[in-house]
Image 1 (cartoon, rainbow, N blue to C red):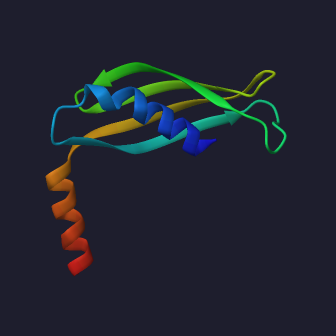
Image 2 (tube, one colour):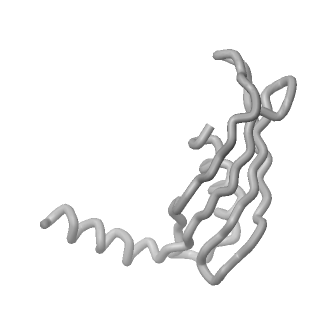
Length: 94
């Protein structure tokens, strides 16, 4: 469910980023509300609830074919991709 929440929020924000920007997840606070049998389809509905400079806050609801099975608050952060990659390179070199 966490991956679904992150991917739905990522997809909502992605078209609005400037060239050279990316995004990373900061936190996910989720609640399981009901079980879903293995193999059933689930979907997420996400809304951008707040923007604080480069921090994006989402409210997400997760549904299976019958009912709502989860809800979450998710935060993402808009990054400069080149700076992010440089930081990673320094970590790998250390």
